Image 1 (tube, protein in one colour):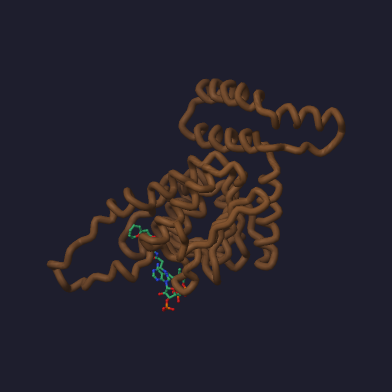
Image 2 (cartoon, rainbow, N blue to C red):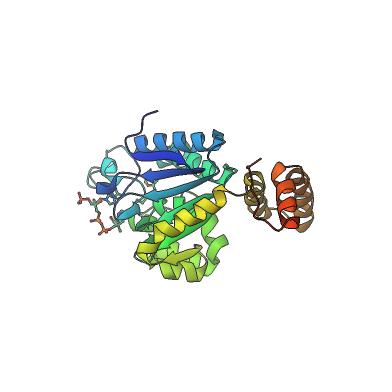
Length: 266
Ligand code: LHQ
């Protein structure tokens, strides 16, 4: 598939996906959804891609759904009422599931405003960095909607119920430093440091023990539903698998030989 609304390339083990509709703050259209899905599927299937780095072109990260194709006359009682659930089922939910189930680390570099579904796409990623000038807005309540794209699931888990309710009900923007202080994201950085730091983390993860990193991501996600016994069983099974990888053998050998490991991602 040729892309028109995103940029996608794999180099040095990193799949870089850039949302690229800067004039509309990278808000989602049906086409952009199709392209992002396709790119994430390619990244999942490509052994050369050992982590994914998502960012936005221009001054915004993503303003959520493109609302320009949703305009309705509020005075026209007969105007068709859209089925937004269908839009979630067909587009946003598959997107969030792809990020969550991708067994490779997904880094998100939030370069500017992240609003509505755009904020929750960022929060679905594994390591979220944001420029100090970026803002996170659960904009849904402002237009009569409910946080979607996993927001009602991720917000209470990331920041606790009191802050989740404040963010979702008030729809106010919070800045990147507040987001980091609250534990919503990993780190807020000076604007000029965002991409160099995101690239440094991506380079590090791309040279990591990819299978083990994928298992870590899945184990932490499963812990949110498991009790301790179930999680201990899961750790046993995952460690069995990790212990059989070439990268584990290399990691131990490198430690004993006092050198840097050369992981192959196998
Ligand atoms: C936009 C958008 C946008 C179109 C900026 N659409 N053009 C899922 C299921 C199905 C349907 C419904 O929704 C969902 C999930 C959702 O995501 S709902 C939430 C949708 N998003 C929003 O409500 C956010 C709307 N945008 C804003 O509030 C502001 O644009 C923010 C706070 C993000 C940025 O404000 P500013 O920095 O002041 O920029 P701006 O408002 O001037 O925007 C720049 C341009 O981008 C402007 O176009 P123009 O032609 O006038 O220069 C905006 O119209 C356009 N834009 N967001 N979502």
